[in-house]
Image (cartoon, rainbow, N blue to C red; front, side):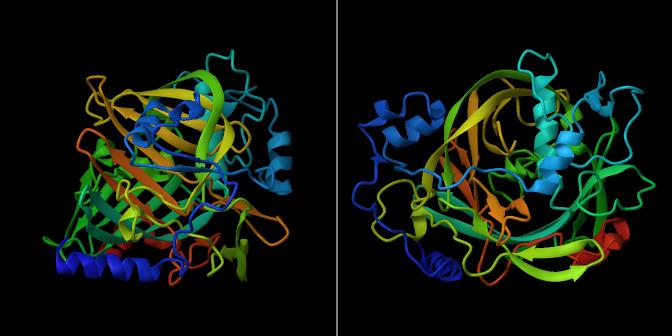
Length: 431
């Protein structure tokens, strides 16, 4: 590793939680190479191979709580029972009239029947509405591109999302009929600084509208929605990998293929804490503070012998999941079949297995449990501490640190301006 990369790794570690990766406590079970028979079918084959070759160690833990969403969301989900269906395009529609609803809050499909031919698509819609409940969010991201020798580079970025469907509080006026809008800004290093993307996701069959501001030419370029499957700034991440799945449900064919238990990483064994910020017209802002526990990576942990991209201090906890396959309808989409593992209670997706268009295994995408709650659990949201994309074909990975103590994550935040989520706002953001 060069001197510059050594300094970069040290700086990144300083920005993380001040505690170092702790060794396993007495009595803790840690699955290491040579003991993978204990995993049974609790992990996908790719994760098993990581453990077998010594890249990962899985420190097992048990949650001290039952993950669930808050009462307001749960009550709304109950009221949605039997209210919605899917049409032939996998669009959410009113079950009686077949019309597209103006606004949906809560799970649109709280009763999932595994025998239903549309169960896979319905599960993925429940997953999106669990995410949309955050309303409007701002997250700092440190995107770490990592090779076998260690950290290659860190890309500083920030993601902002504005939910029109599924948001808490009052619906937003929206003549364009969008479901969700997203801005991703690259902040460093200098050769990518200012590069910014804007996505409009429509609540219907219309494809995403995607624009990029390119500082090198000081111009905005509109691209096709397929570009959301292109690698971001030389990393292993594509925009549709966000929270495992940030793609458009209607652009895939879905099939529920089974259920199982799955070991997933968790930064802690109780909910991550959120703290009240400002009160505003849409309710209460919630944000992370220094007590939000992050994840440490192998490349920043002295003495670590496994893969530099391994999350070394995560607990691996068992969760019940649906197994769902998705096939892209667009022949130019860069991924082939993807297999998703979606929590049967919260509908968060923790992992996906990505194949090439030719059907060869390519990548595994992993996020942590992501259950974050206010002090009395009056509000709970998906706020993850880490995201990991392992490209096993190229033997490298991108390990994204989502939470940094010096830059809090903000949920239902008033710090976003709705007028910034358009082409004029994109031009202003890029500059």
